[in-house]
Image 1 (cartoon, rainbow, N blue to C red):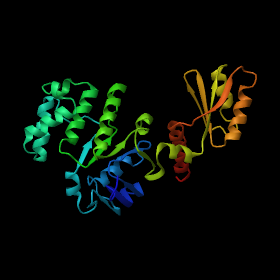
Image 2: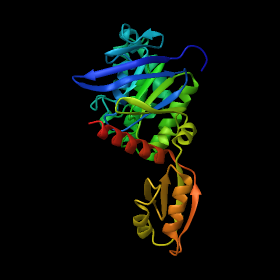
Image 3: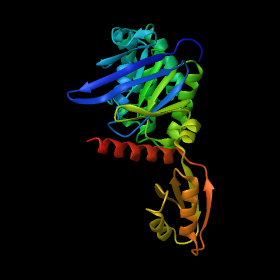
Image 4: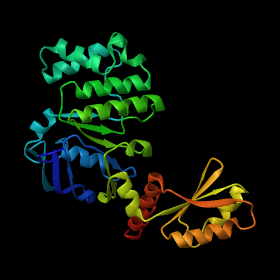
Length: 311
């Protein structure tokens, strides 16, 4: 990850009419990094990614992507970028091989057969190359989409909610492949709502209402949140949950199986509330590690309150 950043933007801004969707965002991404974009729907994640890769022009801000100016050299950027959308966008009445051959023609790859063959082999699609894309399961469609996105050997890969509707095994295999590509030097930006996927990124960036509100490695973001988590086990969990909601220092109360997770920013205050709520119930309570999901919910609630207050 040495050398100049693959992405370096400052003050990136996009407006649609009177609405500012992305508001002066600045960030850098290094070669071989996998960076996750998190945030609620409509937060500006996809718009930011599209401006960075030249698919959408910025109204304000400066920066480079792959050494090219994002505002004046979008055509050069596009040639070096692979983009995988959330919705499967290839021809369902063509086979896997025919779809890849079509994509190879679009990029002007030569010799096409060599590019298609090597991509089929790399993504484990050779045995299924004659199968119609429309007959594939979600996981195999995802694999085909990834293959089409990296066949032209891009330097930057953009993934927009890439594993929506895909089973856990296929998701894990997909992420194993992403890490293998990153190890070879590919830089990856991924927009996701799945916390386990965010945890597989080298760094995460949380965007809300068009601004960055948290960034760093997962441990850094969790630590910066200042949240403390207590777990309650045993006793009448639903009754304890009702008692805890609204108690001093308690921000989140969530059931996980037979346990109850209680989260707040003041450890001492949350601890006292939890102790009071379980007293005489036969339940047990103890401190536990705060999860990225706890932080995600906290950030969503905080930014929603802030945006609501500003209206």
